[in-house]
Amino acid sequence: MMNLPNFPPERFPPEFERELLRMGLSPDDILRRQKEALDRAREAITGRQSSIEALGRVSDLDKRYQAGERNFSEVDLSGCQYLNRCNLSGADLTDANLSSTGLTYANLSHTNLKGVDLSNAELAWANLAGANLTHAKLCRANLYRANLTGAILTETDLEDANLAGCVMPDGSVHSTAEISDNPLERFKRLAWKPIVEEGDGDLRSSKFGGKPWLGADEGWPLCPNCDNPMRFFLQINLAEIPEVIRSKFGQGILQFFYCTYEKKIEHDHSTPNTSVMSGNWQTGVVHYIEYQSCLDSGPFSLRRLIRIVHADGSPGVFEVPETACKLANSIEGEFPPKQIVAWQTYDEYPDYADYEILCREDVSLSDDYDSYVQAVAKSPEIDKLAGWPLWIQDVEYPTCPTCQQPMNQLVFQLASDDNIPFLWGDVGIGYLLQCPEHTDQITFLSQCG
Ligand SMILES: [Zn+2]
Ligand SMILES: [Zn+2]
Image 1 (cartoon, helix red, strand yellow):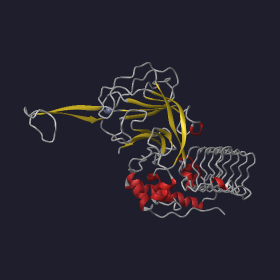
Image 2: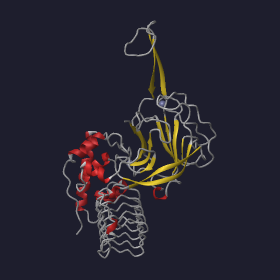
Image 3: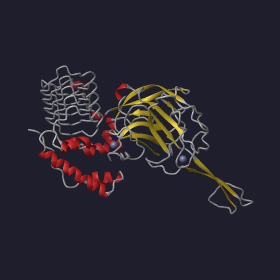
Image 4: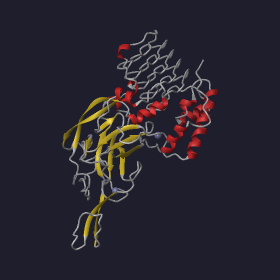
């Protein structure tokens, strides 16, 4: 018997609706999504093998499913984060690419997973009972408390997989001693602190400041808002990041430019203004300076340029332009270049703001702040690759322009005055966030204290 998903209510739960409104969706968008979710679920209930609830997130597969197809062998769902809790029971996924896919709580019982690539996949609490995993790749997969009862593991690659608490094919529980009391263990992510050396490296190297790789026929990026040269903050050569996340963010060299231009406006008032505490009170002339930053600071504003370049061919020859600006909050001149020479890994758990959202989705978690604090140490306020965002304010994942899902994959966090002597507002933090499904959709936002 396959598990059928619960028939969904006509409306989304009110807290989910509020979340969508906060993410900037219009009430019409929400109604449209509700209708689509309902249609998908109706289809799933009449479907025979795999659940459209899971596959409907991927539009191409959705079309194939609508056309009556049930055999999804050799599909590529790698990196897809939306299969958590999906029901794929009994589906044929022979040789499918499911590497780095989020399949937490998924029902994969009696699924044909022969030769499937599940390396780095999230399979915590997944039901794999009776699944055929012959020749499957599960290296570095997270199988925390997954159910493998009766699964076939002939020549399955389980190297470095997390099997803590996993129910093995013979019904025994694997290495119970490794099960942590920390209820957040399954949300653990690896983050990497950049280890830097002073000075600029190769044009293709990972670095803060210095010279980025630019194409032969392109000039230095100018801010479309104010026409001033943008500042070069960060470049990450994605081929040189730690192997476990090497394919996660895309391929090429990720670059981040940001306009820090601040217009200096000098005011002279011939009439003394008592609110301005400078100037010559005898002559009655008050002089003060105001800095106006480049306008438009939303996550999709024009003042930031984030791109992944392929650095093929010969690079352009250029000098880093003087950014003709005075920064009220930072040093003058250019950022002293720092080359990233190594990455130091550490474990991270969700910020409390993210945890509150996880609690809404999973009633087994306690939303009591004290027990959260006991379970998890606050992550440090530093520059880092991957991991969980350290929110200064509330959770703020922009909506992906391609799929309208939250862009909740942290690529890089830029703290104030860590490797770059720049303050994001009042000692805030900047976040480079990516859509987990559309690696070309990367955005930047900052939160201030
Ligand atoms: Zn600008
Ligand atoms: Zn997307």
